[in-house]
Image 1 (cartoon, rainbow, N blue to C red):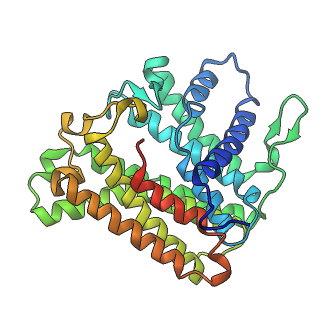
Image 2 (cartoon, rainbow, N blue to C red):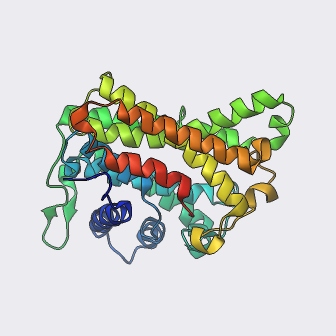
Length: 324
């Protein structure tokens, strides 16, 4: 049983990270480790990171009283898709970054072409995991990696949720808006700039965070149209935007050693951010409001879900305090 006063978020995050990374490693070990593309996939996928999205999926499952092991196929797929997006985001044609998660970016450690293909491989294999998790075998004994698997109808629902969030009307469009640059945005009135920025981050970051929370509940049979799902989705919408606001703030005043990547790149690339529009202090106030609204949504869940939802509440508050 979890107690609100005694709940240790750091231990919870560490435990769920360890579980997730053990499964990701088993997935990678299916392949010949001498292949350069497998090495590139491993370089980026196993470099660490917050693992926020898959942990949100597991926490969402627990919040509705489910067994998080049923969410592991979706959690692994989500982290693989997220890592693909980071590999491509770092490419010279996009943000041209040298560091990610404290190690050289994939195209720096290997080559640009290998990085592109490693991202492609992570993205496509994620949907293999979602569609047929029973076929993922651990080596050397050929045992199933995933012992608890949702029903096929649920797997199809998960594919629909995650592919939409990652695709043309989600993360891809958000990245496209980001690539449009400041020349287009500079012509917009002030309030339209704020709306543009909110939409950009809802698509680029928010939709995969929403999909993660939804996937956790869907994996154990909670319907997308249920009142519980509506509250979880509202929670995810709020923390998704809060996460990006704090990300923008950290790019201004964060510690690059803690973050594992350079700071100040937004200003260098003349990117539109919440601090450039609102200022740092107002951005912090905005993030605080979003997190308070997210937690409020969880307090509206049925009483028997309040204690199981403690990890989700703590994660929302962690977003405000995070240093990386």
